[in-house]
Amino acid sequence: MSDLYVVVLDGSQPDDSVFTYARDFARETAPDMTHPVSSIRDMVMTLHGRCSRGDRISTLRIEAHGAPAAQRIGRDWLTVRSLPQHAADLRSLHSLFTPRHRPHVVLAGCRVGETDELVRALSMVWPGVSVIAAMMRQATVLMGVDGPYRVCLRSVCGVGENPPDPWSLK
Image 1 (cartoon, rainbow, N blue to C red):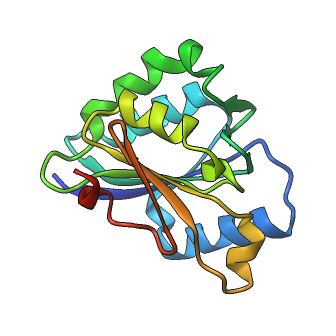
Image 2 (tube, rainbow, N blue to C red):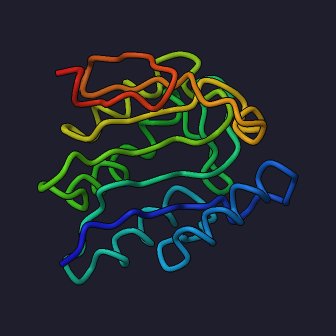
């Protein structure tokens, strides 16, 4: 049984310069742990399959386009408004996160963490799992500028220039 770093890629998105870089980087750094998906449901099924032999997720990184308080996952946009229709599927992922370490989900879409509403809502779906989201455009990271990031653990949120330690929020 292993703790996994898993990258989920938007498999429905046509390539552009930012997304192509993110996809290629993920495939180079975690080739066996990178999975293209076509929807939120497909992501959930893929992760359950990946963990079917007892492996657990320590980091789940979702690489796709984003907008303020919105993360694209395949053809779906995850927002606070769409969360109720995906809540049961997303809640089912909670058992896949490792209890041994400090698990977290990284929403890598542009500006997803500009507000805390989606980040906070997801951290409530997965109690004990921190959710980290970029507050800037992905292209900014390509130019060497890191941060700021928003992080929430349960209902407590913070902001930091580098991905902040979510466990300091307790």
